[in-house]
Amino acid sequence: MATLVEIAAQLVSSHASSTPMTSDELLAEIAKVHAALKNLEAGQAIEGVEETRPSVSVKEAFKKNEVVCLICGKGGFKTLARHLSTAHQMKPGAYKKQYGISSKQALSAKSYSEARRKMAQDRGLADNLAKAREVRMANIEAKKEGVAKPAKAAKAAKPAKAPANTTAKAPAAAKAAKAPKAAKAPKAAPKAAAPKAKK
Image (cartoon, rainbow, N blue to C red):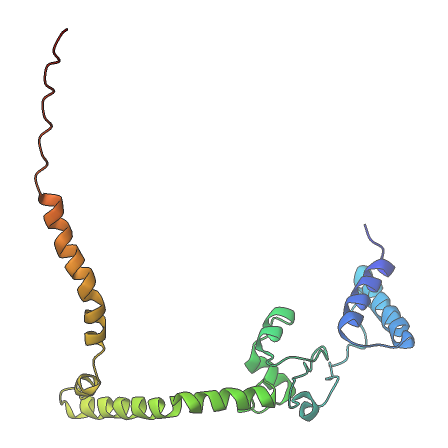
C-alpha cells in the first residue's frame, strides 16, 4: 500500500502536469496535501479549506483563438464543453454560475464563434429559422382560432423532391420489371440421352 507521502506526490504531480508551478510552489503543495491526508487518516476535519479561485480572470479566459479553463488553468481549447464534462464532471451552466459568467457568454474562443456565425449566415440558417418561426406562430394562432393548420399548406407550397427521386428509381424499376419475365420463362426439359450404339 502506498504511503501518505507517495499519495501526496501523485496528487501534486497530476496537478502540476496541467498547471505550471515553480519548485517552491510544488514543495508547498506537497506539504499541504500531505497534511490534509494525514488529518483525514486521523479522522480530523481539514482546516483552512479555501474557496478555489480561478488561475486567470474571466476576461482573460476568453481570448480570440483559445479559451482557458478557470478551474485548472489549462488553455488552448476552442470550446470548453467537452473539457468540463470529461476533466471536471461539470456542466456548462454550473461552470458559468460558479464563476459569475453571463448566461449569454459562449464557452468558446471568439474566432470560433465568429466562424460558426459566418458559416450559419452563408448557409441561410437565419432565413430558415425565421420561416420556421412564422409557421410555428401561424400554427399557434390557428389552434387558438380553431382553424385548419396552415403548416400543411406551407409544406405543400415547398418544391417537392419526389421527381428527382422517381427519375433515379425509374431505371431500377424497369430492370425489376424485366427480371421477373426472364425468371418465369420455362426451362427446357433436359433431352434424354440417346442410346449408344454397340460395336
